[in-house]
Image (cartoon, rainbow, N blue to C red; front, side):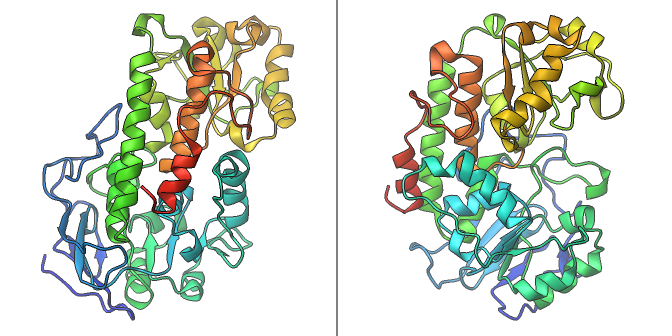
Length: 413
């Protein structure tokens, strides 16, 4: 496939040799296939991709410089930028949180459900960071009232960069390749790699799957804010080191039963999830080396199990994925009380010992991951890492310095 220049109105980039017809196609990249991951339980923070090649061909030495530079990322390949993108759009708050960590919140032109998604992060986590704010006034929701995502809203937002996998609109927006090509050429390019969870056949032929920090490094390179990335990577490594030093032996770790937030205990519908699965969605669970209480359990559609199966595997701790989206009383009425009131559910060890906790949001970048790692560590090991105080509350003991996060975002290292 030959190298092709995209005629964006801003004309600030061109895709490399992995592009056909103006958009990145899955399967054109010669990296490892989708079943491989660079780091199963940790996150790589170096400047090289997992295949050892340098992740940047050229880069400016100062932030927001005007020299041309290039960044390599699957599935796009090598992308050349003539200038730093000004406005940008993520799909969800995974890549959104990466942008916020780089102090680009005021440049975000749109996101899926800006008020709801950013409000949640603000209430649960961002409010603990001194002076840190993400204002969604004027930020467009990319989803219309009829729950569709139309190309017209992308024309209206008129963003320099769409920070999302170019295959994502085909999977989630019901677009086709022509739609992605049209927006890439007439509005702005797509740059990203879907790494929330393992990709299935809808994403096309397998292409490289990055860790959270590998993807974050490339986003930082695009916006020429590598200093902030490196500072977050250092903080992340320090937190991971402290956790690793404090964790008990694997044989002494409690078993966790992770249940989907779509579970309805009042109806006996418990949907089991695998907390060791790849992707940033489960990063904190892998990093804490948890034992999956339901490993080997026979499940129905979407991981459905009944109370009898749950009692057979009997997790010591039960966590409901997406639990942070509930207020405390709502979480109790939706999940805790039905378990306590069920004749089989009340026999579960986690129920009897009061170990039922809200889990994190699936969409996390570097900032949210710090909070959700701390939250899980305190839920699992309160005697080691301090008591989990409840949603939105700053714990008495913390795993990381909130002021340090604020300084990094502000560019003060």
